[in-house]
Image (tube, rainbow, N blue to C red):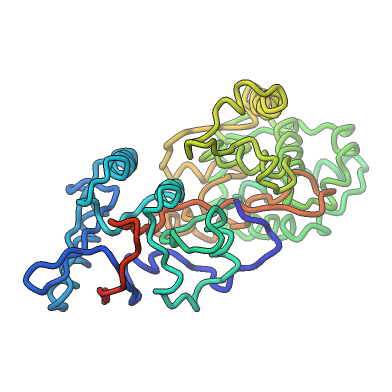
Length: 404
């Protein structure tokens, strides 16, 4: 979780290190016949497409470099890799890999055992925001023990044809019933209305057959939410959930989802971090003295239980009212054509671009950064894999290996 107040120097961080190795120094590789062997473990099985792609890069590197060789080591899963490294550190196993790809939790554990390599003096990091790296390594503020490798955030994807269709029908009802409603005040509304209005007739027919949507507008509901229709700001979860509820109450559910969450866990973390005023000291997830998550702090603390109950009942109500669809592991991209709003990883952009012919049908925004618009500060969610170095010795030896 990262505070909203600082900005990244670069928008794209993915694959900085996996496919564009930047020169840096290691202190714990093995030497055979004056050649350096660097062991690199990644959380993918040998037969996976990701392992094969990385293997291609490593093979090319090994062919072109005489002195440094890389041995690529697979793992069946992230959990297997994490257990292998943590148990190896506890057992003082000197045959651990030099580099691993994993989540920051592994870097945090390795650093707590004085086994994490510090990249700060060995890397040229001009392409990365110092604020970003500081926040990303906040458990070890004087060191850089994990580097962002393939980072993503949460996005709000708006289905322009579906929203535009709803808004045009709403305008017709408002005009017919003498309701003054200026939807042009909201840029997203104007964009969606114009987009649907300009679609080919054949495309509209296909969409309507897909959605099977019927309308059940209510004059009182529209008047009670007039400010929402004329001043909607989707920077807050409060407004997103409220607008979703209004759309739901104004329609008879056909073949559509009103709000889809690809990872309700990420949404939960974001909402609860904002409830903690973007302060980790007040956040419900904490580490204990054993460097593991303090579950007791959650299960035995009434305040923490109330925080979780609050968000549980929020989801429960939306789910029972069929306003929220939670489909874990659902990668059927085509179904996004029938969702008003989708909270998904921002990697969905490339997926839609690759798999669907209608990228222009969607508007891609940041996921809400606040719980309520009245709040001054907000946050945004970051997740992804990192590059982590493992020291073989507690006492740092002079740097003697130049990789790349």
